[in-house]
Image (cartoon, rainbow, N blue to C red; front, side, top):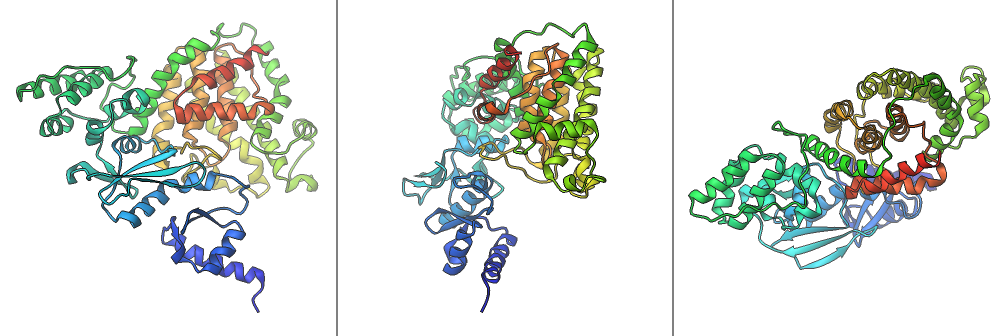
Length: 506
């Protein structure tokens, strides 16, 4: 008779066979009842709706949403294709968001299909599908991305609701910047007799500095006999940093985010007093902050470290070669790595205090911080040296967050842009807040992004004469919620207020 372990192994083999075929949305018919119940009980399978499941990790806590958010877009694509075959698409607004790189999981996903039942299907973790009986977009107006059937970008901009521009100004501006030439948008406007929409889009293009496209739309519609009145669909105009024909949706979106958010940061964050005059005193303050900083930063990430362990590491009394009791302790590796990275960050801060450009210094040095952070794990044989080769080569997901970090290719486009923005930014307050936020938004590494993001924040603090600032463990929930509001809601104000409040308490 097979043991419990052998039975579980057999069930896992069945699940693995489905995953190897790329199946994320698992119908009940694909697994026997015995295998399903066993996998659910052991935490390897989770029910999304009656008859549909996703793979999950057995170490996830009750109510954990990470596996669902990580599976969401694959699941919905597979489920909707199973329901409607190819006769479905997402709505214009969601189509635009996905095409400019915004993979935030929506609370409700709107789906159009001729065979829809005009009903809501509840999923898990407060998400749902709303299927609407509606005609499909014309064949030329339909595109597919990772199994998701979408309105093309130009068709989405024409068919989206007017309030999309005020509800999602960053995404709408990024989408407009992705249009290369007026011909992409003018032909469907003429074919559809969309004179009102033409005026709105002309105003939108002018808002983002695409005057030529705006003028071509107006001239083209007028020559066809339409009386078009240009209206700006946005509530405000901001100076857009993107002037070239930028074809990366991720870069366009980051540029627009930076431009819009910096204005909010400047309204809230205390003004810089300039570089400190006493460099030695500033660096002493940095050294004095180490124990508190290490304890809180590591604890925020879930490591269990004590001040005694941190002091042991700092004093040099801990070594993976000589201390058998600590050699295999993951927490000890993290503490030692933090110490080594902290020393590297101090060297970067010293350069910044001499007047070197903070963006260029951190661009040159942040990979050294990362390598030092993980070096003890390599020495102990826990971490693979290949893991330190550079930015991640795999997708990552942030626990309990609706935000999905950009894909691997986008990371390599975005990181140089982040440091270009930091190097060109004149206001230290903006470098502090947006440097940290955009770094963790991109999430360039497989692990350690929070720690590196806080190091980056403090390097930028030095560039403005602000003191080294510790984010306390007891305010972790507030910290994470503020980052989530910035990532998902595009509202940088809570995060700016949060960081500013820490300065006020020093």
